[in-house]
Image 1 (spheres, rainbow, N blue to C red):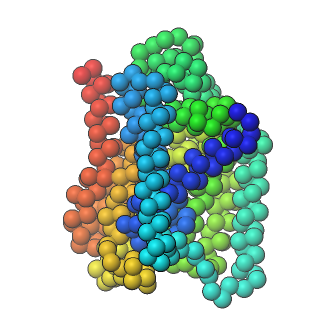
Image 2: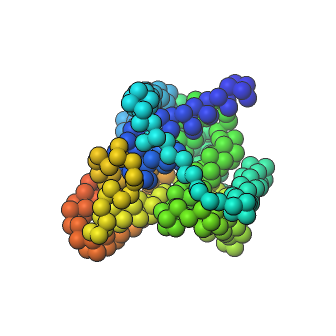
Image 3: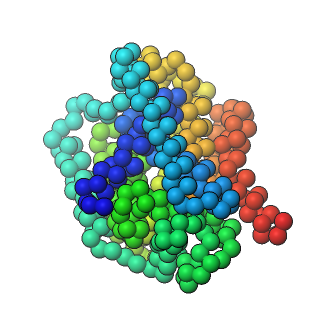
Length: 374
């Protein structure tokens, strides 16, 4: 497949599909899901949740990679059509700003604007280095090996990535089939699996990570036009000079972006913090939900259910990318939800969280039973 077709397919899978699918959960949300980046992030995690929901049963049932690709494409296409309908309704009802909220800072001087220029320059350098300077480690043999074996044999997790020999389903990793996502993107775009892992995924994941950091900054600093870019500049610098160990979050984000643990530490956990910040604000007894947004269209319904939907999608994404993600997210969210429920006197959010954490508990139960040979 030529370069032009690869770029078009990448644009569809990493821009069109996530954005249109993100309009579905964002329509039930408030501030977190009503920015352009917020809509994209909703769709980003929805797409990964779809991959997890489709991939695990397909692997355990012995389906082919081609079957999984067709299934994921069908689901994402259906979600995109629904997103287009929501978009059309927004245009017809002239309520499009409800779904597209650009943060326009008022009274921002030239000096403040230069902070954004500095951030984008530093980010461009970081992205360029991650693309042009390829890093490898022993995990290449597993992650890229599994993706290549799946593409070559049109199977999933029945080929040893180290020797190429046929083997039984690797049950542990079948519950977190992140290499299969690499194989799916390679199949639908035409790019080589190694190129997808080392060049394409780092580019999109790092940009998405900074989208999350921006949303967190605007939540923490209350849309301050100066503190937000300063925070992002500090994040770029911390990530650029955080390679003091092979186990740091910064090292994983920049040099091992194509591994599931990098996605867990660099994207999923920060997004969980963002949702927790939003839940803490929205359940504050002294604050009305309507204070979150001035638009009357947004005030019609509580955004809290939408946040729990996204927490459910995020937990599925955590299960997809990493086995430790199943229990790490459950512990992190459990502590945060307990604190919010006690502090804000909202005990009902705890059973609601139990439902969103169901994927974590379900996969952990299966993993424990399988480990005992049951």
